[in-house]
Length: 182
Ligand code: ADP
Ligand code: MG
Image (spheres, rainbow, N blue to C red):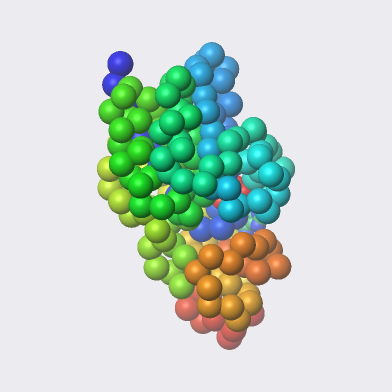
């Protein structure tokens, strides 16, 4: 049986984790062996579980590096990865190899950072994937379809873990208007 790669991307609050959990639960119902990973640095909601903003959750293994995923995923049929933008560049080959070995690999991650630039290895992962789904949030300023994650704090670190206190989903226009939009 062949494997393949599916990418779920979008801004913060767009439903990436929700969609990942939905697909993995269906794979569970189909009695497939699944394994879910997240980067160990992301401990916002739970040490181990993957948790969505509408409070769905599913157990995962927090890992420090992409290599650990290939070691731990050996015996499963479906591999889920959340917050893929935070992994090192090894994640691209790891996902490619897992798919080459017959596994279904489902990857969720931010396509853009808070500056609106492509985030980490997401562009590469989207390029090698068989399927790419872009999900959208609601613009917190005007209610339009939101594609961008707007940072409300003045910090300029690329990785600044936070929630509705630090970020809001915005459409392109309100993202570009910055402070003037709100
Ligand atoms: P992501 O993983 O993309 O950050 P989640 O799957 O964790 O998103 O959360 C999606 C949920 O977030 C939605 O079902 C909704 O309940 C909630 N939510 C909060 N703010 C927004 C917003 N601005 N637009 C859409 N959904 C939002
Ligand atoms: Mg998420």
